[in-house]
Each structure stands twice: as structure tokens, then as C-alpha cells.
Length: 441
Image (cartoon, rainbow, N blue to C red):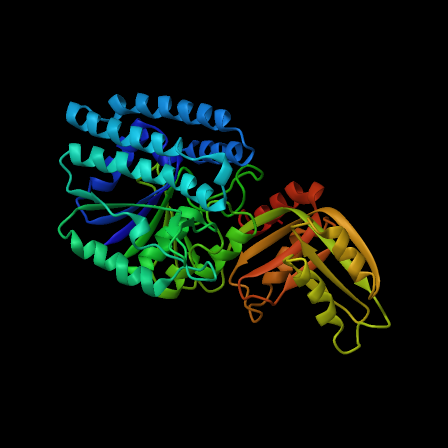
């Protein structure tokens, strides 16, 4: 069985729901399909919660009523049989009445999570009902019956594996199993969500849990590219990536995939394929544990980076200096992207400046601190094993005319990263693309 995931734009209208339904049923194979909420719905649900937090029940009701009108208009567009239209109308009315039952005097994060879950519950019900109307053997598996996180808010894989398989076994013989992405229950049994990676994460977790043949992530983008097509000319889709390469690209700017969401698939050695709903016949990008020796796969960039340098000839060689520096970032829960050290200084980059002033204040206890804003990390991804001769020099040659603030190489076998000014980003990406993929020098 394959696990397929479709995001909000893929089910963003009745027509798109019909197109997805045809796509998942055309080959007759058995599938578990993970769906997001209809595009725009989650934003409306967040707005409802914000009104309730602010004590404005009338504002919340106004958004609910607009959402109600939108969804009821979709019913005759999606379904042709009156009994099915009546069933969906009844379901929708129950959902919107439920949304209006929340009160401001006891509204909390717990209630907010319940509200946010309604989008996925509605979209999956709609698609399942449409499939049944088309004569497809389809059933809805409620994610809240088997998706669960532990006390650390991490997926409880033992629980998910047991109960997801029990759910599948309870309704054998179906062609299509539909379930919700993003939503789950937490260790207390309350409705919650997976946060990182959303529905992609759900698909990866379920693929690992049921030992799927393949996990497919369907979006409106044709897989991963060897560079950002919005910035660089003559980019090409990357047809194959190692899991580690995909994680590097996702972290450093390839927004098609969240960097953590494919970890369960990687651990279970289940291939992930990125596919395009606009071009379903395109091969997309296959991600698995297979290496392609001697290849540079792609380039990505991450904006809004801040570089921090601490210079201290007195303390750098002293025992425990780096520990003290790292503890400052740990105290303010700020992750470090890149780090480089020398005998008299240490430089690092961060993408979260919420506590920058406090961090800089603490670091000044240990040395002279300088800060560079508006920086960008450019990451070259591929087989970057240190024994491969000339790979790093090719990237360096491409950036010969670009000022480079930091270079990180050797921390991974899959990337070399450069910290540059954001104003140099486009030129750097184009130069790397020309040198590494288009044969220019």
C-alpha cells in the first residue's frame, strides 16, 4: 500500500477535490490518503480563535458565518445526489454550530487546538463522501483514533503503529482509505497538532507505521529543483535525492518539504516521492537512502540570517569557553545554523533574532562581539565526502567574485555552506548554477 498526501491547494475547491479523487483512483491500487484542510480554512479558524482570545464573540461568529456560507455553496458543486447533499449539509451544520458553541470566558489553548482541527475533519469528510458517490470503495479513518504524541510532543510511534494498523484491519477490502493530516491527540488525550511539517509529517509517520511501499507528497510544485527557479535561470528538477540531501535542501530554503518530516520514512527505509498535482505524469523527485557518488545535486539559500562574532584572545583557549558561549544560546532557546572557530574568535549564524539583544549582552562578558545583519546562507548539496577531490574548489571558484563571510565544510558529507550578504544572493546562486550545472566557467 502507498501513502499519499495532498495539501490545502490540492483540495482547495470542489473541482480540485474531484481532480484529486480521479488521481488517486485511476490505477485501482489500494492507498491511504492524507488530506489537509481546504486552502484558506485554517487561516479562518486561526482568526476565529484570535477573536475568542480577545473576548470578541461577535467577531468570531462573523468569520464562522462567512465560512459557513462558503462551504454550503460547495455542496452542490461537489455532489450530485440529493441524499448525499443532505448528508453533507447536515454534517457541515453540525460543525459550524460546534464552532459557535465556544465561549470567551473559558477559552484557552486547548479550545484553540480543537477549533484548528475542524478544517481537516471537514475536508476529509467531503472527499470521502464524493468518492463513495462515484462508486469507489472508500472509508474515512479518523486520525484522532490513532495519531498520538508523547509527553515530549513527539510522535508516539508504538501507539500509532498499533492503532493505525488496527484501524486498517477493521475495514478490509477498501480501495481508498482517507485520513486527516496535521491533527492528533497529545499524551493527555486532548486534541492537538503535529506542528512541524504538518500533513507531510503525518504521511511520513503513517508510511513508517504501516510499512508502506512508498510515500507520495503531492504539491503544485514539480519536485525539488537544483536551484530556486524564481531567482536563477535554467534550473532543472532534481529527480533523485538521498534523505540527507533532501533534509539539507529543506532546511536551507527548499520550501516544498519540511526538514524534519521525512525522518520517520528515512528510519523505516521507505522511499518518499515528491509529485506535482498540476503535472501528475511528471516523475517528480524520489528521495531514499541510495547514494549517487560524485554528484552535486542542488543549491539552496536561506534568508534572514544574522552573524555573530566573539573575539577573545584571553579566553578562547581557556577550558570551557565554547561551553559558556553555547549555554547563552541554549538559555534563550536560539538555534545556531553555522559555526566557525579560530584561535582567537568564534563566529556563528542564527535565523531567530527574538532574543538577539540579550544574547549579545551575555556574550560581551566573554569577548568583543560584532553583529552582521541581512545575511544569507547558500548551501551546495550533494556527495560532499572530503575524499572527493575538487568538489569544494568548484564551489569556491564559482564564488570568486562574491564576498564570503563564513564557510562551513566537513560537518556533513552532504553539503558545503557559505554565508554571504543577502544583496549578493542572486548573483551567487546564478554563478553556482552556471558553474555546477550548466558547464560554464
